[in-house]
Amino acid sequence: MVTPRRQTINKRTVPSSGFHLTDVPPRLLKLIAAFVVLLMLLAGVLGVRAMLNNPENLPISKIDLQGDRKFIKDTDLRAVIDKYKQTNLHLLDADALKADLETLPWVRSITLRKAWPDQLIVMVEEQSPVAFWGRERLMNKYGELFVAELPSMRGVFPTLYSPEDNGRKMGERYLSVKEWLKGLPLELSELTEDEGGSWRVKIKEGPEVMIGSENQALRMQRFRVGFQQELAKKLNNIRRVDLRYTNGFAVEWKKSPVGSRDSTDGVAGVSDVKERT
Image (cartoon, rainbow, N blue to C red; front, side, top):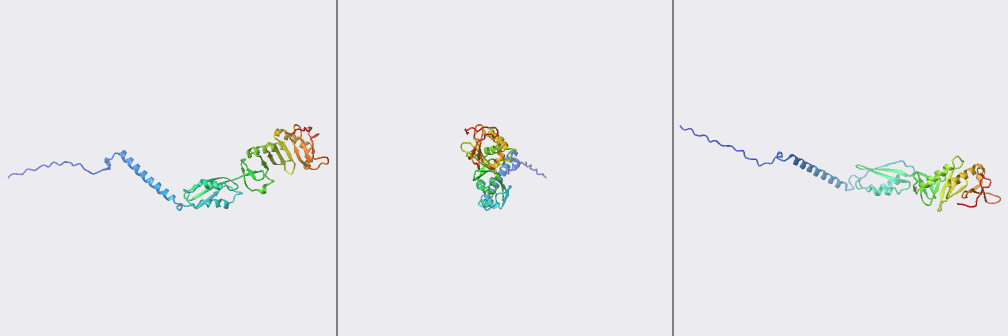
């Protein structure tokens, strides 16, 4: 009996034709992942932007008015804001709203803040008046001029004016004149400058004092000495004191039997020189 021979079959490994992530270099995998994330973020941003470009989505529903206000009415502020709030924070024309609000009387500055998703915060800085500027305007504590009505304070605040409209400079001059009058029972109610640079002072419930365009400190010192020695006793009868002389000053009386103007002869030991500057 013949035993058949077994055939030996050589099994060879056939290469697989499938794709495996393990075959991709790690660095390339990271780049692909970053690109996918970037695409997702971009799609999200475009989606949110498309949504916000519709003013009916997330409309402004809360207005928060902040800042101390004594003269500004909330109704005036909201009347302006209402014209702009029919949209969302993304589409809001903040620059135009700010400019419109700052045209209101008594508003010095406006700062706008957006609190997402639907709140607008309006910071209001109100004017702080310290003086009248001529007949029609006011001056704030920064020396800035503005237009507003405040009749109740006429006579309480001093009145300043200069054709240069330089509030800061006139404010400094006002403080200088107050210092020159310090210690005297006189209250300064007006300080004005004309086009020639000549200063004029008005004493509250008293005379006006013509200081002139030069040597103001020296002239006010001369007035101070004259007031202490002689003029204080006759203050209620003095209409005007003119300091625009080289060495003396002249007094115009409200009532005088011999004339309306006397020199300073015998007052404070100075003589009246008929040359004004």
